[in-house]
Image (cartoon, rainbow, N blue to C red; front, side, top):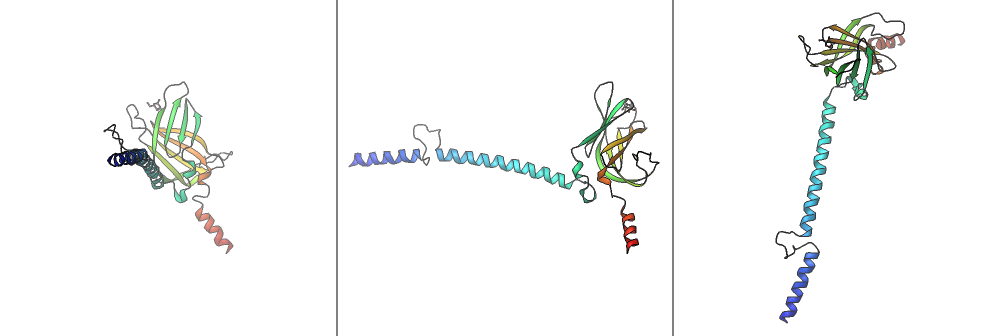
Length: 206
Ligand code: MAN
C-alpha cells in the first residue's frame, strides 16, 4: 500500500513538472515551464508597450509642432529641394534645415535649423516667368542657429514663400555675411493671404 501511494505521488509530481506547474527537483536553480513562459510573455509585452510608447511620443511631438494654419505645411515635412547658385548648391529641407555645399566639394555648411513660421511684407517685381515673391504679405520660414560664421553670427536663413505649381527654390542671396534669404515657390501657400480678395469678391457677388 505504501509503495503504491509513493508511486502515485511520484507520478503526480512528474505530471505537474511536465505541465509546467512544478519545477523539476533535479535542478534546484531551474524554474517551472509555466513560470518561464509567463516571464517571457511579460518581457514581450513590456517590449511592445515601450515600442508603442515611443511611437505615441513621436506622434504627440509631431502634433504639437506648428505646420501653419489648417496644417497646410504638414505634407512638405521630410522633403528637401535644392538649387545651384554661384559657387554653391543650396538645399532647403522643410521644417528641418537649410544648407550649402561648395560645388568644388567639401563638407556641407548648415545655414540654420527651422524655428518658426512668420509673416513678412515684401515688395518685388515679378519676372515674366512668374517665378518671384511679388508684393504683399508672404509666409516666411525662419531657420536659425546654423554653423558659426568666421568672425560673424551663426548662419541663418529666411525662406520667403509664394504660390507656385511646383516646389522650387527660385533665388538664394546672402544679404549680409552668413545671413541668407531664399525665395521659394510652393503650392502650399496658394490661397494663403488672398483672404481679403476672396471676401471682397464674395461681397461683389451678393
Ligand atoms: C563660407 C560660406 C559663405 C560665407 C563664408 C563666410 O564660405 O558659408 O556663404 O559668406 O563662409 O566666411
